[in-house]
Image (cartoon, rainbow, N blue to C red):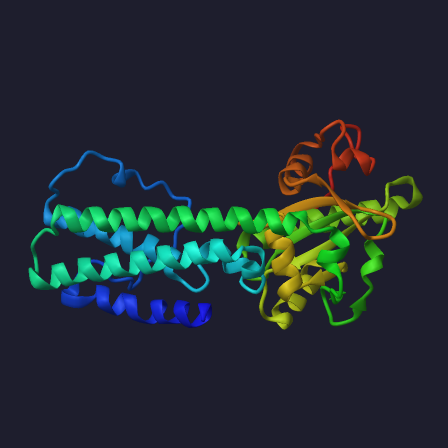
Length: 320
């Protein structure tokens, strides 16, 4: 039912919005974050010139797509698991807000088609603005609820049945490899330019820790792949010498939602218990920590890098 609703909305509402060549067309539009401020909604009521109003409607169309997409763009990187982390009430509120926005868009499109080239009535604009604002708030609320639900599950329960394999090939890797270790969850993808630039720094750090042997705290890396193509991931990992394990699919979605990761590259550092049942969050800004260390050699006195034996006296990892 929910998937059918999402598909119907995604299929039908742009066509209705395009009636009369209105600026509500989504053609060629990018997809912004749902957290973008809706500043023009809070501005004093004005009667904009038609070209100005058309631009505002184009912005509305782009933002509305983020709400009406299936799943909403806020859940794009955890599409396989997000619904199980949102309550029935939360899903009901989201679908009601989507229907309300869909209806407001249809009314605006019909008004534009009835009077091509004219400004839309203030009442129609107001309804559209209110419906979009409600839709965005509802998506954000659903995202917060989903993150809270995912993060409250014990590590062992969240990872139960997870199938890991080497990042650069399909060799199976046991999950208990990470028990009792400080683990850097590396969120990355082959298609991400900044990831390709950053990966050598993490590879260098991992190599230095491995070379340190027993003198360093047990440490490992788990790639949380945003690649849908396993071959692309393997080629990317092989090219950069990433010889740690990787997870993808539902497991990657679960870890993305659990730690509320919204962009890549990202590193979340956790400390996994000896029995693998729990994982304590150590840092959600591992990428920033490592980038700072790679450029200046500075580390937080009690941060995860200092626990690995790195500090001002150490040589930053070379990515060359």
